[in-house]
Length: 437
Image: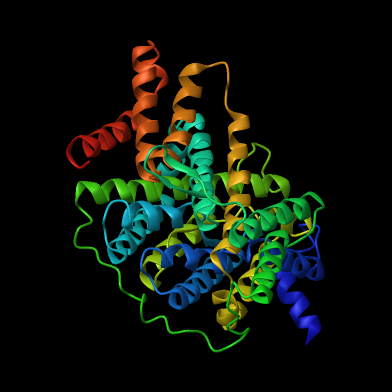
C-alpha cells in the first residue's frame, strides 16, 4: 500500500525531479499551516464587525482556504497556500460596508464578481498586460497602505488609539489590560519571528489569549465541537446593484488588489523555491491564477472576503517544500480546523490585534523598494499609503494614488511614462469622487 502511495505521489507531484521527498513535503505543509493559521480567527473577527456571524464566517474561511490551497497544489503543483486575504477583509468590512454603507450581502456579491472577472482574465493573456501595466511604485504603495490600515484597526482593537474631538485621534489608556496584552503579544510575535520560531503568530495569539482567560478578561468557550452552521452567510450574496458606479470601483479594487497580491506572492515564493524558468517566468501561471481566482469567486458564494495566495507559504518553502504536495497537506489541515470553532471564538480582539499589527509591519516593508530619487514615482506611492489609514478607506486610498500618479506624470511632462490603463482607472475613481462622495 505504501509503495502504491509513493508511486502515486511521485507521478502526480514529481517529488524526485523537484529534489524533495514526501516526508519533507508533509513537514513543509505543516509549517505553512502554522505560519498562517491565525487567519481562521482574524478573518471572522474582522468580518463580524460588518455584521456577519462569526461562526459561519469561520467555517467559510476554513473551506475557502482549504479549497483554494488544494486547487493550488493539485492543479498548479505549487507549494503555495491560500486563504481570505489580510487587507481584503479590512476593505470588505471597514470600507465597503461600514464606510460606503453597502450591506455585507452586497459586498459578497462584489467579491464573487471580482473573482469571476479574475477567472476570465486568467484564461487570456490580458492578465499579464494588466499586471505589467500598473506602475510598480503604486503596487508598493498599495501594499504598504493596506498594512497601515491594518495597524490602525489593531490599535483600535486594543484601545491604544481612540477618537478625539480636537485631534481626530489620540492615544488611549496604555495601562488598560487589553492594551498591555496586545502590545505584549505583538512584542512576543516579533521576537519569536526573529528567532525563526515556526507558528510565531499563532503562539503569540494563544499566549495572550490564555493570559486573558486566566485573568478573567476573556471567556473560554471550549476547544472542539462540530462545525457551526454556514446558513447565516451561505449563498447570501446580492448582485442587484453591481452596475452602480460605487460598486464598480469596489469590484475594480477587489480585482486589482487580488491580482497584485497573487502575482507578488507567486513570484516571491516560486523564486525562493527555485521554480522560475531560465527567463525568470513562472511555470503553470495560468493554473495558479485559476486556482486563486476560483477560490475568490467561491468565497463570495459561501460567505467570506477575497481569497489570495499567502506569502507565509515561504515558511513552508524554507522548510523544504517544493511541490503541490505541500499545499495539499496545508489544505487538509484547514479542513481539520473546522472542528476548532469554540477555540477560535474564545480568542479576544486584542489577541487578534497583536497579529494584525505584526502583519502591518511586514506589509510596510514594501516601501523599501521604492525609487526614492524619482518624485513622480515616490509621491503617488507615499500618498497612497498615507491616504488609506487617514481616510479610513482602502478603495479611496487607491483612487487617490492612481489620480495623483496620472496627474503628476502629466504635469511633469512625463505623460508618456504613464500607461493608458492608469489613466482609465484614474478617470473611473475621479468620476466616483465627483458624483458619489
